[in-house]
Image (cartoon, rainbow, N blue to C red; front, top):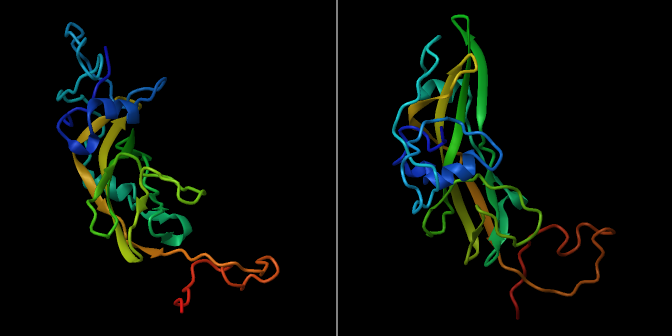
Length: 233
């Protein structure tokens, strides 16, 4: 026995290559979401993926309650990904502005016809459009908050001009179910959900020497965040 890619998803670009699936779903010391059989007689010496290969063989379910549809997974798990951002979407041109999503693995346990059933939705790709005319970006991680200014993350973006830009995100999930702690069964197809758009508010920087103490006067120049600087004479 060896572990490999999700059944019926070998050609699905949203899940990436076998190696990407290994990295995302089965880190070192973990367990695969779906175990499958692999022909160990195959010579993998020149394979980029080592002793794993993509497979199109279906995984049999426990066969107790019933099968599920992707629409049932979407509605029962209340999938509703959102776009989050550092500094409420405010950023500076030519610096990293960080956006990320709260989308993650969602599960639900229930009982149908007396059989314990679990549903699972796993995000496998995130399609970002930053609204400034640059090419959309596809990532296999949802990103994360970043406290440090101008620090790149997998989902941050650099705007070259000031202005307000509409940021959109499409998240692609796979759906699975299992009965009574049996094997996870992959539901054919994917779930595609759009998050509510957010605004990136991009500013330019102006350097000025000031004597005010923000602790003593929080309303002083530069203490309240981005402001409009007067035009130079």
